[in-house]
Image 1: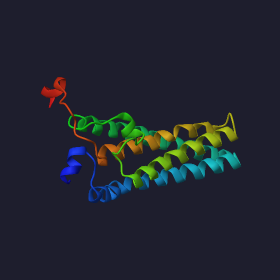
Image 2: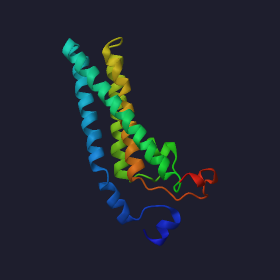
Image 3: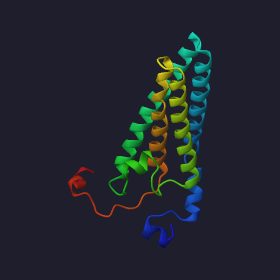
Image 4: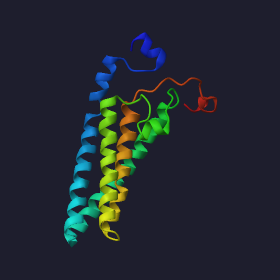
Length: 169
C-alpha cells in the first residue's frame, strides 16, 4: 500500500484491482446458487407438481445450510481479524463501507437482492405451499457476503488494542 492508503485504511488503485479478482470462485458460487434457486423456484411456482416441489425445497434447504456454514466460517475469520482491524457486522454481511471493492459489492449485493425478490415473489404468488422454503435462501447470500468480506475485505487498522483479549493469543 502507498503511504496515503496506509494512513487512511483505504485500498490503492492497484490494490483495488487485485481485490476485484480475489474471491472470484466464491462470487461464482453465489451466481450459480442464485441462478439455481431462481430457476427451481420459478419452475415450482408455475408447475406446482410434486417433483418441482421436492426439487425446490431441496435446493432451498441446501442453499440455506450452505449459507449457514459460510456465515459461521466468515464470522470465525472476522473474529480473528478483529483483533487488529476495525470490522463491523454491517460491513461484513451487508457490505457497508469501503471494505469491499465497488464491482464486487455491486455483484454480491445484486445477487442477494435477486434472492430476496425471487423468494418473496414466488412465496407470495403461491401462498401456503412449499415455495415458502425459498425465504430461507437469502441466508446463502449473506453467508457468501460474510465469507468473502472476512477473507478478502480491506479494513482499517484497529485504533486501540483490546486489553481484555491481550493474553489470549
